[in-house]
Length: 311
Image (cartoon, rainbow, N blue to C red):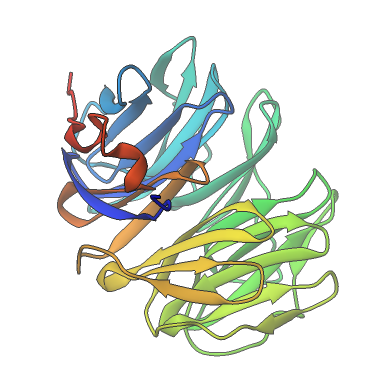
């Protein structure tokens, strides 16, 4: 009798650039963006592959984040190599195009949406999408902060995390205003990612293996299985979460604790996405793509021969 053993594997897929962020579209599909201005789509035909569907007009466009609200609407944003400012691209009607009407803010590192009509971006500033335009909502109470991660649970509960002057910082939106979240423990370093599962359960992580959990009233430190910089996280449920970080580090949350998971690489990982509990992807340096799947389930399939098709 064979028992299912799911694990991470290297693939023959190579993206152009470092995969910075990935997201699902709610119908089994997914997309990933890279720091070379490319966006790839997961195509489920056959055993599945990643196909390049967009290339920015210049390699100066570094895409750091992508958020898909559904199969027909999404956003991707970032910054410009060597230049101040940001860039934003909009996905609609099956195509990506540049969104030119942006406030002059610095950088875009992450995004989250309540629905396709309302959402936020985080970076050197906080911006809000009101279904017509992006407007600045940066709180003046935390001058000089940079926000690397943002996540919402409903419209009236949005958390952004980052760094201010070399120390971690968090802010929260209550539906009306942003203010500093003083329940986040102070300390050196930055927070790079967060995920709000509910108004009483959330996660944030960043440099030096720092992991924090929100219980509805305050953030508390949670032991990390390894000291690394945690770059992105993805939760399938309150008892099934993943994080990826520097040096090929991967951690899994089982509902009780975070455990280190063996990865077939020492390259740093910057993005992670799961289509279901047994089908996940991680992206890192030099276009690296890792695939998480059930080893035994693929013995009689062609899954191990997935290849990328590029336009």
